[in-house]
Amino acid sequence: MFSRKQISLAIAGVFSLSALAQGTQSDLVKTLEQQQKQIEELKLQVEAAVAAIEEQQSVSSQSKTTMGGYGELHYNNIDGKTDQIDFHRFVLFVGHNYSDKLRFFSELELEHSLAGEGKPGEVELEQAYIEYDYSESTTLKGGLFLVPVGIINETHEPDTFYGVERNPIEKDIIPATWWEAGAATQVRFGESGVSMDFAITSGLYTDDQFKIRSGRQKVASAVAEDFAYTARIKWTGVPGLELAATIQHQEDITQGDFNASAMLYEAHAAYRAGGFGLRALYAQWDIDAVEADLIGRDVQKGYYIEPSYQFNESWGVFARYSAWDNNAGNGSATDTEKRLSNIGFNYWVHPQVVLKFDAENRMGAHNGSGFNLGIGYSF
View 1 (tube, one colour):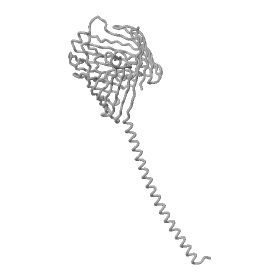
View 2 (cartoon, helix red, strand yellow):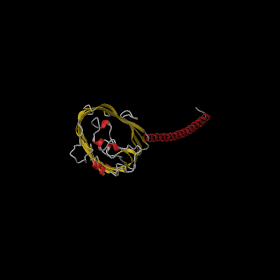
View 3 (cartoon, one colour):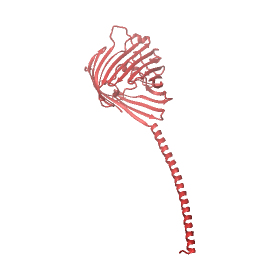
View 4 (cartoon, rainbow, N blue to C red):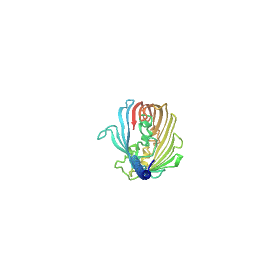
């Protein structure tokens, strides 16, 4: 039997252990609460760090500088009159996105491989402009840029068109590649597929022969007595179809020498459905000057039509008929119209690397036949 003293000591011990347990439990609860608080604080810090990284990545993406370019090597053999190989173009693009709304784009080109005094080529700055998205539907542009006209003037990488050489209508009539300096805006009308472009730029500067292509000043200390005003409307409401028309007014394409105002009219259609493709374009200049009328260059016009078929991602064939006349206003019996037929194929080694062949036949005011070979790329 336990004595009263032993019982008293046992009871006292139980109460002491109970008190100790209660104290330990209280401390544990406090410790757990402190740890939970620390965990919550660490969680907030991690979330803040992740948000900062994502924001930095977004800014970095918006500010990314990009590079690209394209090139073309041509071999032409036309009745012995033209028998040459030429690295026609080497082009580099440099762009920079300042933000999701503001960007810069440039295009630097070396033509014919070698430039300098007495050399066949030129180094040209074809584009250098700032573009700003004023709203979801309106984009503003300022600087040196391609005129919004025709099919290939704004998109002319060799893997995007058939034929070794660019079509003559968009060379001698429009005349691509054609760039000017000034300001422009594009307005898009929702999901209708309609867009409109307006531009105020420098203009051509022809001499008393009124040769359109040689009138390009290329924004090299360009005479700017008189400006050019361009408007284009484009519709792409049906997948694969583009319909567009451009009108340009030049106050004086001789920049004060002959007071020769001029109007350019251009319309085109480009359609692609499956492998079938079709391009058709018409362009005409009307020059209001007695001096132009006397030599038959008050009217200069041309057109082409080009059906094509791409069998798969590698092979495609085309045929193109072109007719143009830079002396269409002469009113004489002399045939000054040039006509050209081309038929050939493209072989895409890669979607951006293409081998080209076409046979051509020249008719009308020029003649000859032969073939062209080419290799082109873009990146």
